[in-house]
Length: 373
Image (cartoon, rainbow, N blue to C red; front, side, top):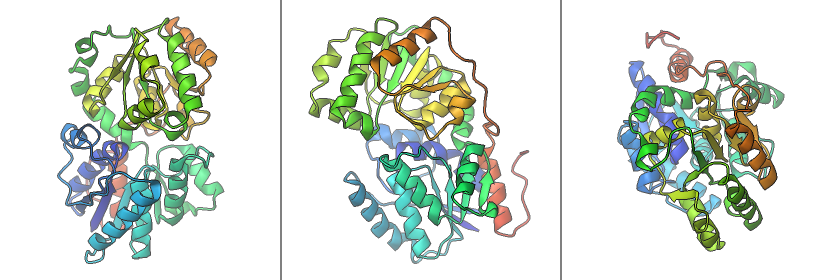
């Protein structure tokens, strides 16, 4: 059996690493890796391949930056030329990026069954580009591998037949568990002059936050207050840095003595920083999940989340961009008044093994032994 996996952006790399390993370990599966090049900066792409021991891509599409339509169109045009002469049994995509959606559309039009890993997540906010990508990818996929039971519920409500839904767990956690010890040895907090458990980590990248002068101003207002409660370290995503400059927020941020802006970090360095933090503030779905498993209080700087299990089961709370609400939540965390989370079902580091088992079963072969599930 031949499986073509397509990745293109930072979150994809974290999710594909354990899947590639599990598929290769299954023995009966030949893997082909395609990198679309949606993220191409060293710290957003190459560093992740090095940290996570992802094999060199078999094909690199070099689509680069652009509007959503430009990126999707370039992925479709270039991927079609890769797939047309290749006989493959499945095309596997992960997450909710433009590369994910464009690759799924390309494959299904060529008659290749699409496997979507991390299927069924919904924020119910169609102003989010990622929400459109999720809906489109799930609609054309032949098999949907879900990370949580709420994702199964969403797909069933949308009319997806039960035989297409496979609850396997969260592949992000497979990577976290594999590299947690190595990340802890890096001591990134100390190298930045930070005291473990006495700082907050901030990440921002979503258009609703960094492209909006109103939202970005409210977040900076919140940081002005939060820095009085706890120092904040802010690894700045290239998109966020560009918008901070364009919208004129550099001076305000530079004037905050307890808010430190640093370059984006590779996977291991960021995980090290996150593991030793008192709390995280983020608009990233993956960080909500990691914080839940690490039992670190998490504040989601959005009005919704496609990962509700991190709220109902984990350490996350959705607080939006209201400065008063954010500071009150930070103060509660600093004072020790925060909920104790628990780890959701099947977030156990074995999701990628379940994916490999299921694909072998779907192909009609005898299931190989690739570890206890």
